[in-house]
Image (cartoon, rainbow, N blue to C red):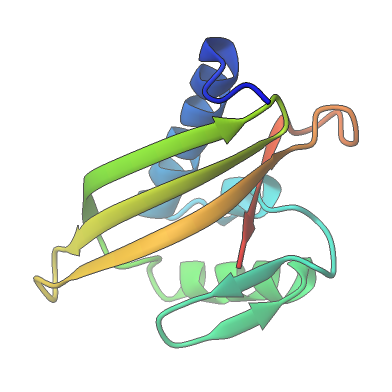
Length: 125
């Protein structure tokens, strides 16, 4: 298995950055599109555990109505790709409101063959 194939790493990095921009600019449609639309997708949050794409989409819409995610600044990011279809993105960020740090580890899956609308999907859990 090849790790960090340059073009795959570049594609995943672009998808990750798209996710971060959408999160910080309160764009739930992009966030929803980047999650795997499946009942097996899980999102563990600070105050909620969400099971399935429908629950995640509902959460994203409710959060958008309340002003979106708390602003944060990424202080460390490590993206590692495994072959052409899977990756892990590990991040550390600082909450601008609470001045506290938190970490996240997310699985990403290439869905280019399965969905013409998306080239990568975030699969948290």
